[in-house]
Image 1 (cartoon, rainbow, N blue to C red):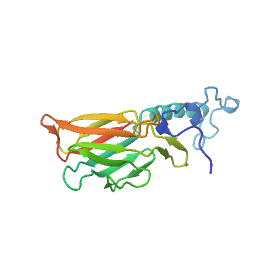
Image 2: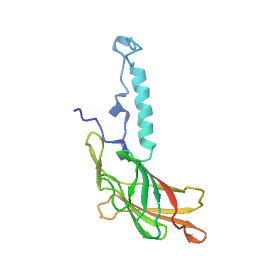
Image 3: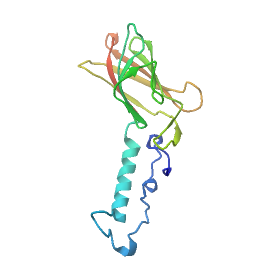
Image 4: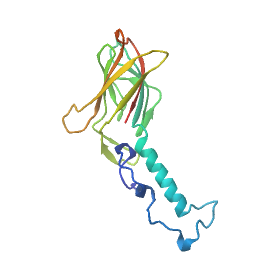
Length: 184
């Protein structure tokens, strides 16, 4: 197995050289691609590398769709969880995630803690420390809500592994809201 250069995209450290896009890359003997049906020229590799780098820097780390459960059972039901490291489309109970996926815990009506594993890894088993930067929420199924999302460092290691999400409207907490959270 070949271990890729650089760190996974989730670390936001992407650079064009990770994708073969050296700024001094040249075509052999200035010929370009020998066979355009099978080969890629240096100019094409450089463009592709710059574009992939730009995408890796701005795509969400995670998108989570969950149903708040403000009555029994208490913990939210995750309907879909799409991470840069894996996808669960069939859903799971928030307090019982598959390995490598976040735990969702109800802390009050409309309030949920989303805890990611401290370290995660990509398909090549290259591991990285989870460090969340931002969460953006939206209510689904025709609901209207405001979101108060803050990041936390529950283990005091200097990295943010938790998002605290509050789903609110003019009356206070939105009961049993269907929510989509995008995480960077």
